[in-house]
Image 1: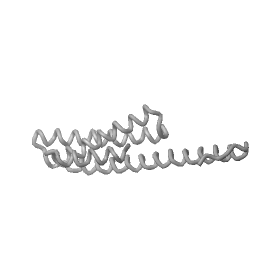
Image 2: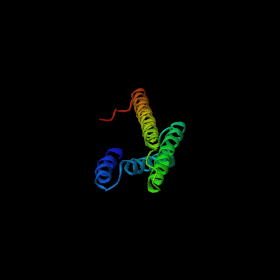
Image 3: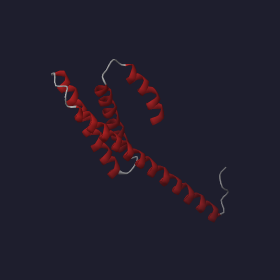
Image 4: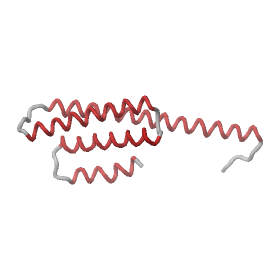
Length: 126
């Protein structure tokens, strides 16, 4: 799902006549939405999801502030964009850790079920 989302949205965001801060801000808000969806669907580990949402929300807030400052004519606070980029990277690392943890848990459950099927004498699928 994330790969399809990335394949569709990245070219769309690049084709829009927006600045770098605005595009990165849209990405940050999208990542907040994905983290909220994961929390709502019960996917992943709650502590990591909360940290993800914190990092992505802070980045989105910084980028929205930067865009608002540019609108009023203040162009010199590029530290907001750099900090937001770093927060997005931290949130992305947390998302990868969360996804990896989910996959490890899935494999462990599958192996445990397979071992239980072997012990009970049931034929193994596939």
